[in-house]
Image (cartoon, chains in turn red, cyan):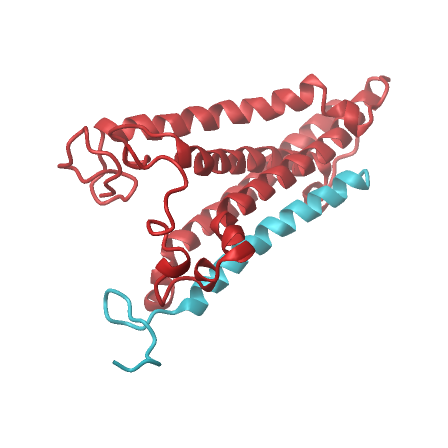
Length: 224
Length: 46
């Protein structure tokens, strides 16, 4: 078992953390939803019904979109921006998309390189940006899904208060939508910036997210 | 060197690329399932 799962322990551990946290969120959210329903003299709902509600969907996806935005922006920003001394940055002087030789493209690809790195043309261009494109697509899709589910929740609240409901284009201009969006973005940006700058002076022995403990503060991009 | 030999990891064991693909695809399926489920629920006024 350990020999089978060991090489994938990092991704499997985070998948398990995700499942446990999502289950906890579902139970706590269901309880909270029914408490609110009770306070408004409305019927409570089953857990199954809550799991397929816009209320739960909105709560899940507003966090998803901010996480995928964080990584999309980070992948893009680290192509061009440098932080001297940070393990999260490339070395000064390497800003940009780098040469075909540095990136092992075309004739510089090795025999065990991914095939699309070596073939050239649109396939190499596409594969060269595939991580940013997929992470960005997940961000946009989850932000869109958040807005669709959020509109349903918003309109249900409007109806409860005998207020007019709104269309989707109107909902994405409301303070409700932007409050939910930006409260997640600000925390992600602060956390990412913290990782960049704290890794200049602080260390974690054994983690590739840190420089080696004995690496000088001025050394950039030296995973430990 | 045998040209058909599969690459070996640092410990000398055979790498298992199929296992990596399973985890990779599992992540993509979980993400896609969540996105599609709540987009459909949002569109259908659930």
